[in-house]
Image (tube, rainbow, N blue to C red; front, side, top):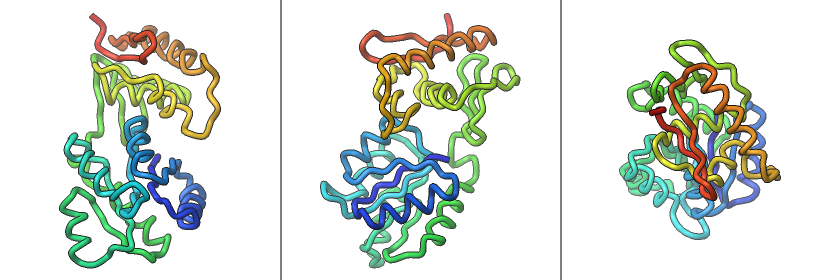
Length: 224
């Protein structure tokens, strides 16, 4: 599971990051609305935990942008603005749940688990291009029903490419999805992983191709 935590209070962010990491959850952290938007653009998340009151705006602005784009990612809002009218406004804007501060960490974790148990029909669970399928629920790729054994970073690259199949994925977005935001990346590291992935897809007869767009990024599409 990978989530984005958008929280500008350092102490609160530290407590939540520690609690989530201890439970094996991969977490990216942002402290501003602008950074949160960049994270969402670069990385497919299982859920978002967003504060309302941020240095550069209201976290609801990001929720509204996601819903307008048709993104159904579950969103849990955290805020000191817990009056009834504020909760109603947050839910109407597209948030899935609303937790007022202060709160118990265990309650936040329970609410996250509940969001991720939503029925499959509320989220896209299977991506398919030609004979290649990607199961978002189990993080598995398969070709004609046969599971592909892929290293974690190749799997992360493939997931983002398939989520945006037919469209160019910026190099920076792929690097952040594969390596995270706190890792120093060697200049050719992404190309190495994509090259290996491309070869494996060809060897299994997936019927797709990964095209490099010079100076921009990569695009996955059905092979002609």
